[in-house]
Image 1 (cartoon, rainbow, N blue to C red):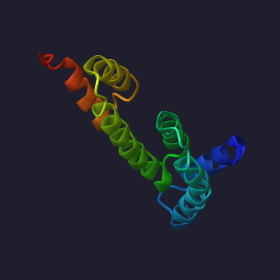
Image 2 (cartoon, rainbow, N blue to C red):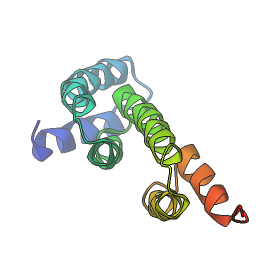
Image 3 (cartoon, rainbow, N blue to C red):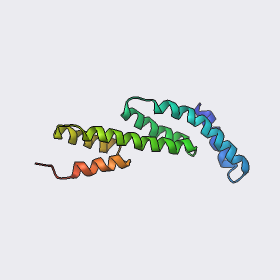
Image 4 (tube, rainbow, N blue to C red):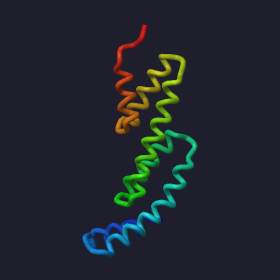
Length: 123
């Protein structure tokens, strides 16, 4: 969907808030959004998927698909954190956790990574 059409949806939603037609417009916006969300869910690189899901959610809010994109982003971030925690080298793990916390610090997994980075080192 092009930006002009998205802007038209938002303008319509704003103008007709509180009227029954508002829900139909929101449903139409969500239907268009879901097409893009399906493609994003298939991105193999999890870091890229997380980045693109965040941008998608910002662009397509208030469509319900935007909230689903954020939930998928959280799930993907948890998967990435599990992969990082499985690293055998503590130095590599801490460096990866630090980078993860910086990039995905707004997710619950990112907050957990920050706690792990700030925890005392094991000896």
